Length: 149
Image 1 (cartoon, rainbow, N blue to C red):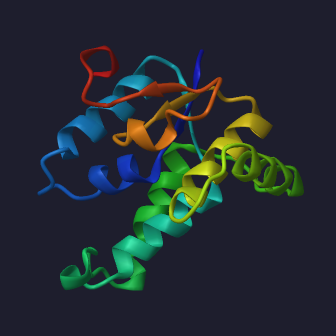
Image 2: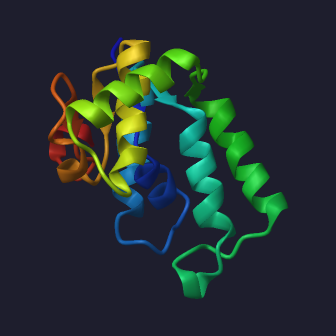
C-alpha cells in the first residue's frame, strides 16, 4: 500500500463536473483507492476547498452555499484520510520557505510539502507539477498521466 497526498486542485476538479479535468481527477483518486492505496488530505486542503467553493462564480469560484460545501467536505472526510495538523508542520514549513526562498502564493504549496514530510508521505497527486518541482524527495504524479488512471 502506497500513500498519496492530494493537492487541492485535484479535489476541486473532482467536485466540478463541467471542468475538463474532472474525469481525470475522479479516475485518478478512484484508481488509487481501488488499488488499496491510502489517499490523504490535510486540513489546509479542506480550507482551500471551502475558499474556492464559497467564492462567487464570477470570482473563479463555485458559488456554493455553506450546506453544500459542508456536505462535500464530509464526503471527502469519509472517503479519504485527513491527517492532523501540528506544530511540527509549522516548523517544517518555516524551514522549507527559508531553504527554498519561497514567496507569494507558493507558501501554501510549501505547507502541503511540509505536512507530507512530517507525515512521511512522498507521493503528491497534483495538476500543478511546476509548483512543487523545487522540493526534493517528492514524487509528483499528474492525474493526466496514463500510469495514474
